[in-house]
Length: 198
Image 1 (tube, rainbow, N blue to C red):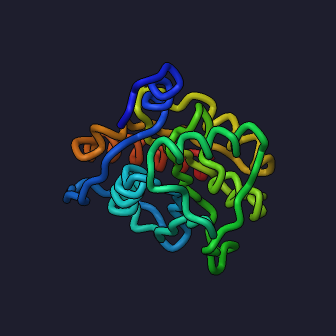
Image 2: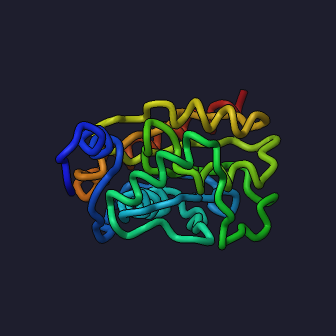
Image 3: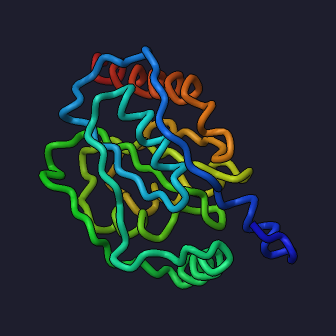
């Protein structure tokens, strides 16, 4: 990862890096897995890893958001392309589609923090579906920028959705974040269950 310029130094703080294999955890939540979708876009593998941890906790269906044209494998080129797409509001075509989207009422949406917002493929995914009556739970992997504007921008894109508390996890530490992810998942699912009872 190059940091020879200020721009690249900033980019390094808002792009996650690295990937890891899923690890086991005994913590589970009580919910209806057939109604839960975990949709994510992952460039380096960090967001995919977080999505797999969420799937372990909920039993929901995993769905990878895949752009028709992959981003450059060269990190600097990806940073530059992502910046230009975000500035222009570009939403890339997607290679994958969710089957039976209507069956899901709770949708975790995962994205890396790119330039303080969601990655363009995630914007395409949200724009391509009707979220009326659904609960969206954002999750973000980052290189130091936290949630930034990701959750707020998702809310603007999915105007008819109800949003629950989002989670942000540092990409470089995602391998060691299973306990934190489990705690957050249990919290947001508990919030939903309480709201259903009311």
